Image (cartoon, rainbow, N blue to C red):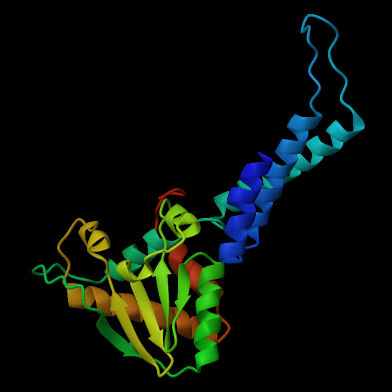
Length: 231
């Protein structure tokens, strides 16, 4: 449990800067401490073992972090929101002939400074909407779905360019690349150019919310998509 707390809890926090992962880490630490302090008798037919003071303290922390973890899990505070991103992007996109291309598609223009764009990308990382990759002249934001985070967290040379990404150039140009895997996950054959445009517009809307200090509306939009906690 202590090893898991570092491998999953603390490492997830380091990669995402999402403080809620610390709750998971301390829950696992408390669980590990309880297991270490647990002194079971060799003969279970004898008197019931008495809990030491250390054991009682460990159990208090264990239950506190356990209930806290259940609550924030229900609130989707540790849920990667890539599935919601893909669904939101496709809401108003009509079916069309398959026109998929690996080439990034232009999606619009924004008028923000380099540092505003970087701050926005880091905010989306913190709330698990997308993970940013910083290049010399732009930031690429890669939406991460539940189940795909392990590749991001534990692959040394993560191939982000092959994934779905939304790029904000520091000169204001916005472009979108949707991976073939993500495109084929849609049940319908969606008009590809319209889908890319919709994806870019979604992130530009999120940027507008962020720049005017209305960050909660980003979460509201994500929560409007009815998907399970683990999908």
